[in-house]
Image: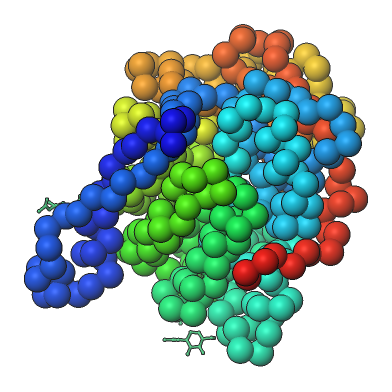
Length: 364
Ligand SMILES: *[C@@H]1O[C@H](CO)[C@@H](O)[C@H](O)[C@H]1NC(C)=O
Ligand SMILES: *[C@@H]1O[C@H](CO)[C@@H](O)[C@H](O)[C@H]1NC(C)=O
Ligand SMILES: *[C@@H]1O[C@H](CO)[C@@H](O)[C@H](O)[C@H]1NC(C)=O
């Protein structure tokens, strides 16, 4: 199609990962796959992420100049009109659907029907230690059945009209408390590499409603960056400049800029900044409230500094968001490019819609 560009991704590592070494040696050398990407899906593209609550399609959309939107897959299944709302407001919008690739959570449309059913219940493991996330259960992604169920979520994204998927939680190996596994599965980085390659091959086998390849990104997981980035189309990072986030690989913004932005792939970066408004830790502002004045000069400067240094870091698509389990990734966003005290938007949402009935999807 006229608005597409083509890019090649290496799928060799997939072959090596899926088959035992002896068999991999017998396979044809590295193959490439053609991925068609919208031409404006490039490093530095403006984006918005709203996965906390359902976007309110009865309100005017802001910001209208964000070309990429990352929204929750199951908000879309409950309210498919979000897709047409975004498409009618923003020409050539690229819609990424957030897919939980590592855990099943009670709000997921497939939770009760699939994961909680007697046949699959055994796939549910431990939760995050954080009190805010007790309704999410790590799944054993080494298990073939679990992998197929996660791939069905990616297929659902394609059926619902998403342009790509943001697969969260591909790093159970980083979730340790006092060195002890909390996920229940003792999963390692080496377990996730073939898993992500399998998800990527599946996404790339699907064609979107708009006729291009379903995109798939890397969410955090700096430990496995070098093993998976070539097979993926973008990255979404949380706290990449924050020393506390991934203790053994900090900070990791630059590593992703080098692997993705340098290859022409967008890197979407989220910095959680309590001073932007009513975070969990804020006693001053109402919880979830978005301050038009933006994050404090100090917090803004810290993020700006994290992105200074080299040209590729300067190509990150960065947003500041509120901090706290049930306010994070809501509509409140400050963009970094304009400088401190500026460019704060609050995308209208309606949290009362979040748990509405999950609509059946044709062909699923
Ligand atoms: C295939 O790709 C892998 C991973 O990128 C690389 O290590 C290997 O050298 C490549 N093999 C060939 C024959 O190009
Ligand atoms: C994968 O999980 C399913 C569902 O719990 C179970 O029936 C099956 O035995 C598991 N497979 C392996 C290889 O453990
Ligand atoms: C995980 O590792 C711990 C410590 O080695 C062990 O006690 C536990 O049984 C393991 N769990 C699984 C599911 O393999």
